[in-house]
Amino acid sequence: MQRAATGFACLALLAALAACSPRENESGAVAGADQTTMQKAIATKKIRVGYANEAPFAYQDPASGRLTGEAPEIARVVLSRMGIVEVQGVLTEFGALIPGLQAGRFDIIAAGMYVLPPRCRQIAFSNPTYGISDAFAVEAGNPKGVHGYGDIAGKPELKLGVVTGAVENGYAKALGVKPDQLLIFPDAPSALEGLKSGRIDAYAGTRLTVESLLDKAGGGMESAQPFTEPVIDGHKARGYGAFGFRKEDKDFVNAFNAQLKGFIGSSDHLKLVHPFGFGPGDMPGPVTADQLCHEPNAQEHIDG
Image 1 (cartoon, helix red, strand yellow):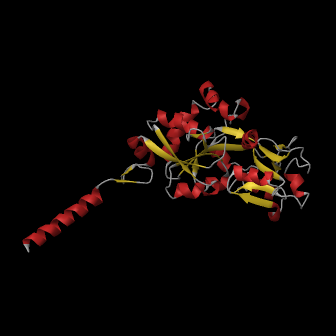
Image 2 (image 1 turned 180 degrees about the vertical axis):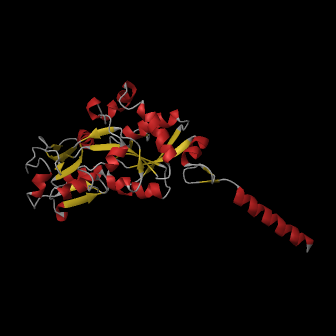
């Protein structure tokens, strides 16, 4: 009887120790009730970032297997200055990035995601790292004469490819493209394959995404020239990309922004992002995430 009682006591002690012991979350960080996401990441010196397979913003290099692109490379610099030296990538469809962040699958979205008011109501954003316009990929020679969203809207027989959750979906709808004219793809390479196979007549993406894909496509397609930039409610729809955080991680956002402030637009930054096609004309200037989230503009009602 005493042996049984002793056994129960040991089991109770082990259970108590297990309950009090720190546990690892999905990011590999030691979970403590009083630690913020940033504190956990600094303590373990590593963090997980969510990305979509979209060059040049974030993608896995096929030769080396390394996570690279504009967003991951900036993240490595900024996070290393904060003492976080290991950045682990979690490949996610673009439309699932925000739900994945909220569910704790990763702690930062590093995918060049545009800062838009509807998204700001779900997550927090760092200040932007670039500002850029859209482009269309079309068949070589542009036989359908597609130079912008208006051309698609004006020809009901034409089909436009967009990526799930991407802002171009909203641009198209706002500019009169009918739902049955839109084909939704999981990522940019899939959309370009849709164009190549004739399933769509144009693919809408950011200028750099379109240029990057066409560089690797091996002919048969081109960027629509000239291209009519979308104008919504009297404003040109220029996209500003940034890093996404959970709403409760305000300390992380503030610390991240403090490091971005002296880096974005610097010679070191321009040298880092030049291989991905970014130049001085793609810098965000003084625009902040707060302005993009709260100022009425062409993107207030635009989301993918």
